[in-house]
Picture 1: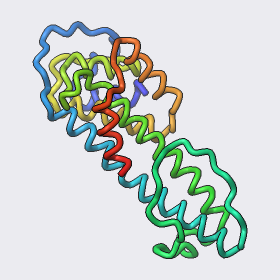
Picture 2 (picture 1 turned 90 degrees about the vertical axis):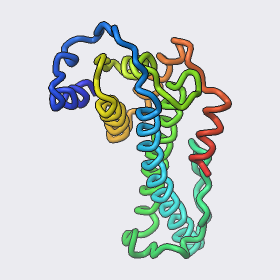
Picture 3 (picture 1 turned 45 degrees about the vertical axis):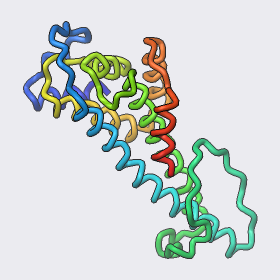
Picture 4 (picture 1 turned 135 degrees about the vertical axis):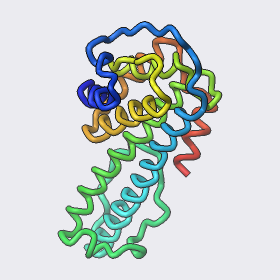
Length: 208
Protein backbone atom coordinates (compact mmCIF):
# COMPACT_ATOMS: atom_id res chain seq x y z
CA UNK A 1 0.00 0.00 0.00
CA UNK A 2 2.73 2.46 0.92
CA UNK A 3 4.51 1.82 -2.37
CA UNK A 4 1.42 2.87 -4.33
CA UNK A 5 0.99 6.16 -2.46
CA UNK A 6 4.72 6.89 -2.53
CA UNK A 7 4.53 6.66 -6.30
CA UNK A 8 1.89 9.40 -6.21
CA UNK A 9 4.10 11.58 -4.03
CA UNK A 10 7.15 10.97 -6.25
CA UNK A 11 5.22 12.09 -9.32
CA UNK A 12 4.27 15.28 -7.50
CA UNK A 13 7.83 15.93 -6.35
CA UNK A 14 7.02 15.24 -2.72
CA UNK A 15 8.98 12.05 -2.18
CA UNK A 16 10.17 13.09 1.25
CA UNK A 17 6.88 11.95 2.72
CA UNK A 18 7.59 8.38 1.68
CA UNK A 19 10.47 8.08 4.09
CA UNK A 20 8.86 9.62 7.17
CA UNK A 21 5.81 8.20 8.88
CA UNK A 22 5.21 11.16 11.19
CA UNK A 23 5.47 14.55 9.52
CA UNK A 24 4.86 17.71 11.54
CA UNK A 25 1.71 19.50 10.45
CA UNK A 26 1.97 23.19 11.18
CA UNK A 27 -0.65 24.69 8.84
CA UNK A 28 -4.19 23.45 9.30
CA UNK A 29 -6.11 25.28 6.58
CA UNK A 30 -9.14 23.14 5.73
CA UNK A 31 -9.15 21.63 2.23
CA UNK A 32 -12.89 22.39 2.29
CA UNK A 33 -15.52 20.28 0.63
CA UNK A 34 -13.51 19.58 -2.54
CA UNK A 35 -11.52 16.66 -1.15
CA UNK A 36 -14.45 14.95 0.58
CA UNK A 37 -16.79 15.38 -2.38
CA UNK A 38 -14.26 14.19 -4.95
CA UNK A 39 -13.28 11.22 -2.78
CA UNK A 40 -16.82 10.03 -2.03
CA UNK A 41 -17.99 10.66 -5.60
CA UNK A 42 -15.12 8.50 -6.88
CA UNK A 43 -16.16 5.67 -4.57
CA UNK A 44 -19.84 6.22 -5.41
CA UNK A 45 -19.14 5.93 -9.14
CA UNK A 46 -17.42 2.60 -8.55
CA UNK A 47 -20.33 1.43 -6.39
CA UNK A 48 -22.66 2.16 -9.30
CA UNK A 49 -20.55 0.00 -11.62
CA UNK A 50 -20.30 -2.76 -9.01
CA UNK A 51 -24.07 -2.77 -8.49
CA UNK A 52 -24.68 -3.14 -12.21
CA UNK A 53 -22.18 -5.99 -12.56
CA UNK A 54 -23.62 -7.72 -9.50
CA UNK A 55 -27.18 -7.34 -10.80
CA UNK A 56 -26.21 -8.95 -14.12
CA UNK A 57 -24.42 -11.87 -12.46
CA UNK A 58 -27.25 -12.38 -9.96
CA UNK A 59 -29.94 -12.21 -12.62
CA UNK A 60 -28.14 -14.57 -14.98
CA UNK A 61 -27.45 -17.06 -12.18
CA UNK A 62 -31.20 -17.23 -11.51
CA UNK A 63 -31.82 -17.46 -15.26
CA UNK A 64 -29.55 -20.49 -15.66
CA UNK A 65 -31.02 -22.19 -12.60
CA UNK A 66 -34.51 -21.73 -14.00
CA UNK A 67 -33.53 -23.22 -17.33
CA UNK A 68 -31.89 -26.17 -15.61
CA UNK A 69 -34.95 -26.43 -13.33
CA UNK A 70 -32.70 -26.41 -10.29
CA UNK A 71 -33.26 -24.57 -7.04
CA UNK A 72 -30.59 -21.89 -6.47
CA UNK A 73 -28.14 -22.68 -3.69
CA UNK A 74 -28.36 -20.61 -0.56
CA UNK A 75 -25.84 -17.78 -0.48
CA UNK A 76 -24.42 -16.02 2.56
CA UNK A 77 -25.47 -12.38 2.30
CA UNK A 78 -22.74 -9.89 3.12
CA UNK A 79 -24.54 -6.87 1.71
CA UNK A 80 -28.10 -5.62 1.55
CA UNK A 81 -28.50 -4.73 -2.10
CA UNK A 82 -31.35 -6.30 -4.05
CA UNK A 83 -31.04 -6.10 -7.86
CA UNK A 84 -34.19 -4.99 -9.64
CA UNK A 85 -34.09 -7.84 -12.15
CA UNK A 86 -34.12 -11.45 -10.98
CA UNK A 87 -35.03 -13.27 -14.19
CA UNK A 88 -32.18 -12.65 -16.61
CA UNK A 89 -34.65 -11.56 -19.29
CA UNK A 90 -33.03 -8.11 -19.53
CA UNK A 91 -29.62 -9.59 -20.35
CA UNK A 92 -28.23 -11.93 -22.98
CA UNK A 93 -26.99 -14.35 -20.34
CA UNK A 94 -25.88 -16.94 -22.88
CA UNK A 95 -23.58 -14.40 -24.50
CA UNK A 96 -22.39 -12.86 -21.23
CA UNK A 97 -21.67 -16.26 -19.67
CA UNK A 98 -21.06 -18.75 -22.51
CA UNK A 99 -19.93 -21.41 -20.01
CA UNK A 100 -23.31 -21.27 -18.34
CA UNK A 101 -24.31 -21.60 -14.72
CA UNK A 102 -20.92 -22.12 -13.09
CA UNK A 103 -19.43 -19.09 -14.85
CA UNK A 104 -22.40 -16.97 -13.76
CA UNK A 105 -22.10 -18.26 -10.19
CA UNK A 106 -18.40 -17.41 -10.11
CA UNK A 107 -19.18 -13.91 -11.39
CA UNK A 108 -21.91 -13.60 -8.77
CA UNK A 109 -19.45 -14.34 -5.96
CA UNK A 110 -16.76 -12.04 -7.34
CA UNK A 111 -19.07 -9.11 -8.03
CA UNK A 112 -20.76 -9.47 -4.65
CA UNK A 113 -17.37 -9.33 -2.95
CA UNK A 114 -16.25 -6.25 -4.89
CA UNK A 115 -19.53 -4.45 -4.21
CA UNK A 116 -19.33 -5.28 -0.52
CA UNK A 117 -15.79 -3.91 -0.35
CA UNK A 118 -16.70 -0.69 -2.18
CA UNK A 119 -19.65 -0.12 0.15
CA UNK A 120 -17.52 -0.79 3.22
CA UNK A 121 -14.86 1.61 1.99
CA UNK A 122 -17.56 4.23 1.40
CA UNK A 123 -18.61 3.69 5.01
CA UNK A 124 -15.02 4.32 6.11
CA UNK A 125 -14.89 7.53 4.05
CA UNK A 126 -18.06 8.74 5.79
CA UNK A 127 -16.70 7.82 9.21
CA UNK A 128 -13.60 9.90 8.42
CA UNK A 129 -15.81 13.00 8.25
CA UNK A 130 -15.99 13.17 12.01
CA UNK A 131 -18.38 16.10 12.33
CA UNK A 132 -20.64 15.10 9.40
CA UNK A 133 -20.24 18.44 7.64
CA UNK A 134 -19.43 16.82 4.26
CA UNK A 135 -15.97 18.32 4.46
CA UNK A 136 -12.58 16.93 5.40
CA UNK A 137 -10.39 19.06 7.62
CA UNK A 138 -6.63 18.64 7.35
CA UNK A 139 -6.75 16.71 10.62
CA UNK A 140 -9.36 14.31 9.25
CA UNK A 141 -7.33 13.70 6.09
CA UNK A 142 -4.28 13.00 8.23
CA UNK A 143 -6.23 10.61 10.45
CA UNK A 144 -7.62 8.67 7.47
CA UNK A 145 -4.24 8.31 5.77
CA UNK A 146 -2.39 7.40 8.94
CA UNK A 147 -5.08 4.85 9.84
CA UNK A 148 -3.76 2.87 6.88
CA UNK A 149 -0.09 3.45 7.65
CA UNK A 150 0.34 6.18 5.03
CA UNK A 151 2.15 9.49 5.58
CA UNK A 152 0.36 12.81 5.67
CA UNK A 153 2.10 15.63 3.79
CA UNK A 154 1.19 19.05 5.10
CA UNK A 155 0.50 21.67 2.45
CA UNK A 156 -0.24 19.25 -0.40
CA UNK A 157 -2.55 20.77 -3.06
CA UNK A 158 -6.16 19.66 -2.70
CA UNK A 159 -5.86 17.52 -5.81
CA UNK A 160 -2.92 15.73 -4.24
CA UNK A 161 -5.02 14.64 -1.28
CA UNK A 162 -7.73 13.41 -3.64
CA UNK A 163 -5.15 11.37 -5.57
CA UNK A 164 -3.78 9.93 -2.33
CA UNK A 165 -7.21 8.94 -1.00
CA UNK A 166 -8.58 7.54 -4.25
CA UNK A 167 -5.29 5.71 -4.77
CA UNK A 168 -5.77 4.11 -1.36
CA UNK A 169 -9.26 3.01 -2.38
CA UNK A 170 -8.08 1.54 -5.68
CA UNK A 171 -5.21 -0.34 -4.00
CA UNK A 172 -7.45 -1.88 -1.36
CA UNK A 173 -10.14 -2.71 -3.91
CA UNK A 174 -7.77 -4.27 -6.43
CA UNK A 175 -6.25 -6.49 -3.76
CA UNK A 176 -9.63 -7.13 -2.05
CA UNK A 177 -8.10 -6.27 1.32
CA UNK A 178 -11.14 -6.54 3.60
CA UNK A 179 -9.00 -7.21 6.68
CA UNK A 180 -6.75 -4.20 6.00
CA UNK A 181 -9.81 -2.00 5.43
CA UNK A 182 -11.50 -3.07 8.65
CA UNK A 183 -8.30 -2.61 10.64
CA UNK A 184 -7.94 0.93 9.29
CA UNK A 185 -11.53 1.76 10.19
CA UNK A 186 -10.94 0.41 13.69
CA UNK A 187 -8.00 2.81 14.07
CA UNK A 188 -10.37 5.67 13.29
CA UNK A 189 -12.92 4.32 15.77
CA UNK A 190 -10.21 4.16 18.43
CA UNK A 191 -9.60 7.88 17.85
CA UNK A 192 -13.25 8.65 18.51
CA UNK A 193 -14.70 8.56 15.00
CA UNK A 194 -18.14 6.96 14.73
CA UNK A 195 -20.56 5.69 12.09
CA UNK A 196 -23.47 8.05 12.71
CA UNK A 197 -27.11 8.19 11.65
CA UNK A 198 -26.09 10.79 9.07
CA UNK A 199 -23.50 8.37 7.69
CA UNK A 200 -26.09 5.58 7.58
CA UNK A 201 -28.47 7.80 5.60
CA UNK A 202 -25.71 8.58 3.08
CA UNK A 203 -24.84 4.88 2.76
CA UNK A 204 -28.51 4.02 2.26
CA UNK A 205 -28.65 6.43 -0.67
CA UNK A 206 -25.84 4.48 -2.33
CA UNK A 207 -27.75 1.23 -1.82
CA UNK A 208 -30.91 2.53 -3.52
